[in-house]
Length: 96
Ligand SMILES: [Zn+2]
View 1 (cartoon, helix red, strand yellow):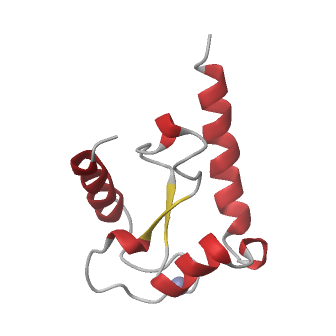
View 2 (view 1 turned 60 degrees about the vertical axis):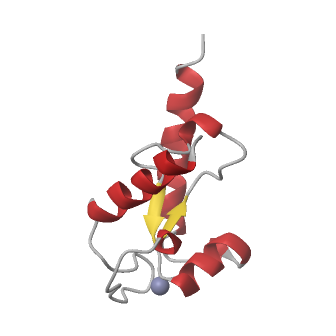
């Protein structure tokens, strides 16, 4: 996937939600790709990389938690897992 396509996806994702962290509620004053966290990681399902639902809006601290910390202890973990299951199901159903 090209970088330009990626940055568009980040911007569209950002514009489609409230500009606040879905985990801790902090207001996010300006766009940054850092605030858009992929739910399904980029490596495992390449075609879901730019899916319009494959993200959560997290501040940089919560993004760190999601990527490297104890995501299972996050209050949005369940919500994220529901989206993950849905997208994986769609992905597998789209395969012949
Ligand atoms: Zn946060």
